[in-house]
Image 1 (cartoon, one colour):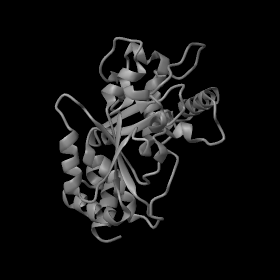
Image 2 (cartoon, one colour; image 1 turned 45 degrees about the vertical axis):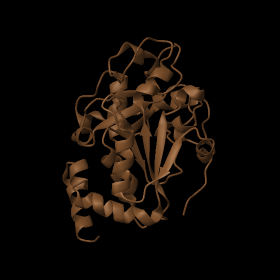
Image 3 (cartoon, helix red, strand yellow; image 1 turned 45 degrees about the horizontal axis):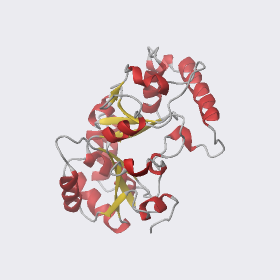
Image 4 (tube, one colour; image 1 turned 180 degrees about the vertical axis):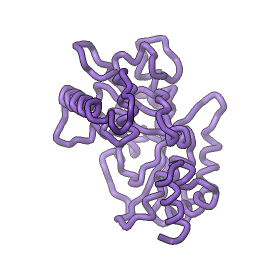
Length: 271
């Protein structure tokens, strides 16, 4: 079953390239055609193909303005900062680093998780086949992070992917003082604050004042090639997931802890 959502309008208009993937072999072939040593690509798997590329903080449907989201972010930061020390020990003093810690523990932030490993993204797109939920087409989004930063930081001479501590991130920090926030999202390497981020080759897109989902931002013709999308039909999801599992892309690899091992054992034994 394929659910129609507004982002399909962008696909139909040819802004975002989309193709259907029915096997791991087709997935690998498509990757081979778009890969290049000089062009890093990032990947994000979504269990429902109609999901937009929006960070969890911006999914509050009762909020619409950046000022409202910014105020909410400050409340979340403050509460997490005050109440988390007994559980995690030392809390980062830098609030951007604190966002990464919050993201790791599923507190809503302006960060959106991506991975440098396409098969990790494919696993996350398909793992819901083990759940008793309504099945829909899944998808893997492909992002050109260099192009995203070129578009979002067009008024600067910067080229490349940002890291925590870069001066250009000032406009993306939580708004704790009056200043001009940045507008469009950027690609950056995160703080490796857990084994999961390392195992999953985790990277991030950080949103700013523009609360529009990344796949709906109009970069005009300059944004051609920014995003691509591979859709996995319902009928092909479980066979591809089983192949991934057999190849060693499993829970204990991506979640190197006891919970990940437990999920993997359950799957191997038919639960």
